[in-house]
Length: 260
Image (cartoon, rainbow, N blue to C red; front, side, top):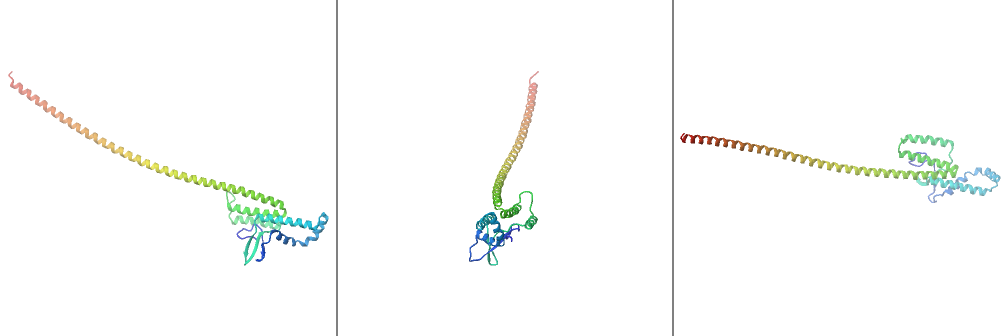
């Protein structure tokens, strides 16, 4: 039985909780499981006698082992209460050992989920990470039931891996944030430089226009000055010619009046 909103990779079980009774602990739930194994007690007693240990001691050891398995499984995914048809159930990881058929079904279901969720196998894909996390939790569940020590070790490996992955995710997010901040600062600086360039370009254009206007004024002034100078020179030449002619006439008159 699977939990809601999960792709059916992890195997769960539901335990009915009467409203007037508290949530059963892991040890009590494991005691119920132990009672279901009463059919094999005769063979176990024979084995215990051969090994030289009492039935109570071995039952106590089996109970401790069941409690250890329960703690490991509850550490993988903590149990939680759910409501279904007005009844309260405790949803927790299944204590049932995995069989060959279950492993085969798990492999097929895993491949189906990868296709259904359109997982990208290259690069960063949060959906792929979520599905692989669920698969690893199910593998820890299966290993923990068969060998609590191995399950505990795999659980520590999972937690260490998640801590490392979270640290890398934070580092990645910090790098993205830093890169975005630097990109924004660069964009602001680029716009500021563009504004300054536009202002300088306008100032240069205004200065060039002023130089062009001053050059035109200077050329007009030079032309006007040249024309005035030429007019004065022409007037001066006319006066010289007039005075020269007048002087010539006066000389002629004097020569005519003066006797030979």
